[in-house]
Length: 126
Image 1: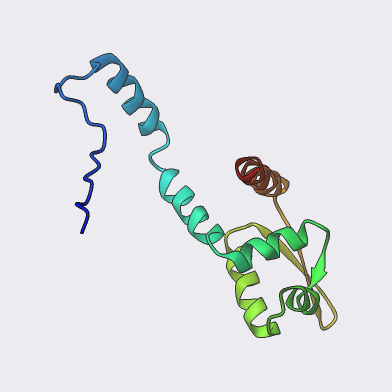
Image 2: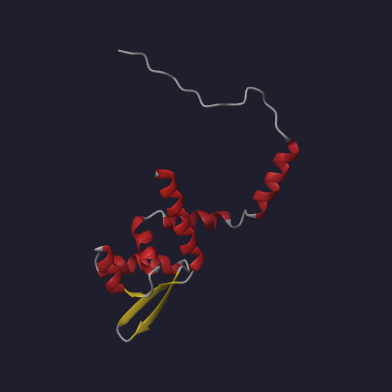
């Protein structure tokens, strides 16, 4: 049986640091300290394929819950649950028209970011 190779991660061999650089970076991170938990929640919310599909579907325009459900191949109840999560975070707007409920993306910047991320992945995989 061949011996297993041990791969070491690169590590500094000398304990030292650039005090000015570290202080500058810490100050920059401190500016965003209150936003970072919210950013983590956003990534958690977007870390779901179904919710990503909903956002990308709604990028084409306003859709009723039934249409979104059919696009995704899910039940209306399951779709409504995902739409509620996205709406509670402020990413979707909702309107009632009689018995119909329509959703649309409330943030064009979110769609722009998602499209950019998709382009980045396509470049990486090419």
